[in-house]
Length: 222
Image (cartoon, rainbow, N blue to C red):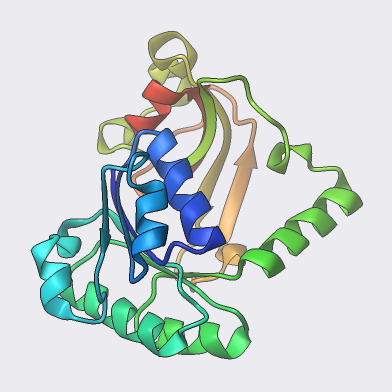
């Protein structure tokens, strides 16, 4: 998986290092030489340049990235410009950081595939945990194992869980299936969830699944 992270503040730095540790090829970008140097030994490529200059983005082939994260919300004008340029260059998924609802609205309007508000999102997850004791958001898995939400591979389309026998063939435990409802919009409520599905459940292209397993096996599904 190839990911570009623009902005190496606390959020961007933690994200870039986490992705690199998980096996992703990370292009880490910031205007600050100091911030770039701090992650240079940990990621695939770390470089200081003006990300609002499309020639710089083309030089590092940002359009071919599987995902781009624009993590520099304090400079909102630059965030908007970088988001637009990355979408225009063909990046598959562009995630942008926002500080408030207004910024989120603008970023979605110009094409951001997903908008992240780290403090608000974490607060929401903590509230959910306190109210419903959903510990999965906070459980620490053993070293070398991951809990990931991924798209169903094309090769699994139309096959039942009994046929796939994921635990035996891939050492994966499937926790949940998320399936979009027909004629759905873009919200999370437009998906039906099937927790702990049985062997008769059939997977379909377009489904997303939550799986737990060894890092190597989980990353193969990206």
